[in-house]
Length: 156
Length: 406
Image (cartoon, rainbow over all chains, first blue to last red; front, side):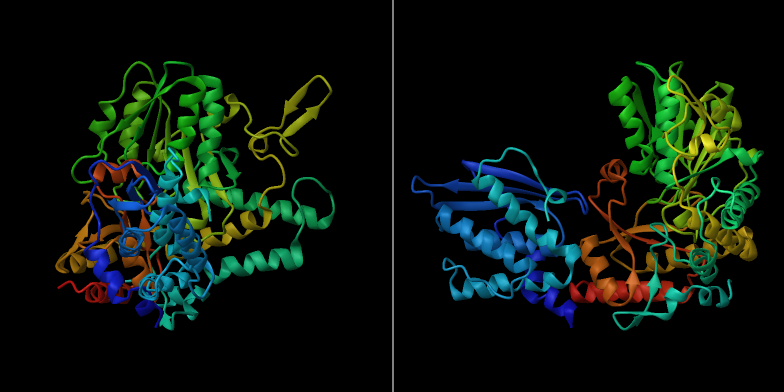
């Protein structure tokens, strides 16, 4: 059943108890994202060290179970990775959530891939893809120091 | 109660959604279409198609007659004084844009004020915002009370010497509040202020009598009224249409065109530039016939009973919170389920064939005021039954089960 694929245990759990939902003290990068269709808002905070490694990452915001779970899994995965690795993971995730059947990034361990794939059920709900991608697009903005708020209505 | 024959007139209910019976609770967004309307569209394209008002051949004559006949039918249905007061537009949105643009162009200047309400759909705010940018007018928002309604008093509070227009919804698409539009018109007219009613939600559910309401402008969305998409109606008092400039320029709206001078056609052609949604206009006559056959009193009674039934049932469901409780309420219930985001609710309900809407319903100002980012909304039409409401409630329970709520 599609619905069970969409609302897996891990999604429901993270939806109710999001991970890394806080504001980091002395972050050095951040960005805001907004989905005007559903009113979901997200603010991603990053703390990078001198070697461009993500020392810490967190988010603030509210939204549906899909968007909260996606932001939770994203922040969990990204912590400790290098900026260029993160960019590669973002691309891989965005391709997977829209069309590809699997994740290919060399920067993801097997268990990390499994965790991320729990979001793949969204594919069958085109109207909900933006819920899953909002925090990821916002992370890209934070990394690239984009000042303007991410708006899900401005890209596919 | 409405007999089940009405549902049978809507072919969409023959199909299954996710292998379940369709429970359509999104009529405030757009209503389903009865077979008569679908057949009329089909037959017009199959056997009768021609553009209207230009050619002299037989098809053009019959198309023009049918097109103008709908205008007559609409005039009667809303009890307008003159046929010329009925202008076809591409939608309710365009009807409001037409007035904001032309009235604004002619009558508004820097420092003038208009009044809208916190309940307004974006389509009765954004067109006025253009004038705020273009002409530096001020927009005042009449506030909602704690029941989610806008009273005559809250409109009166915002009126001053600079008020040049009052534009309000007839029926809120979120709280369901029905505004005292006749009283608002009386008050406004006593101060020489014209009134525009956004009737997109009101028209499908309430008795329309333009001469009794005495509003200056009334915007209608035909696809919410069991009619085709791509069509709206602007009712405007003749005295205004005579005075305000045309909206779009093009074929059909002119009288004479010279290199140095253009004169415009009479009413209502002055406002119907270009090829109009001909088939849709012709088919809309069937929507009105359908409404007349059922009878608006019967529709109002049916929807009122169904609303009471739904509110009663949902109020008993713990963790469901109905948004707003207006004294007079139309066929709309916005709600939230504690601990479940409305988008998750809508997706899970859809699995059961229950179609609702989730989001801010094009009313961001209102949602901000209500302090919720989004709501789920079940809205009723003439085809809905108590069985539909029972299924809604059951599916909400299923939602709670998936999210492990008690």
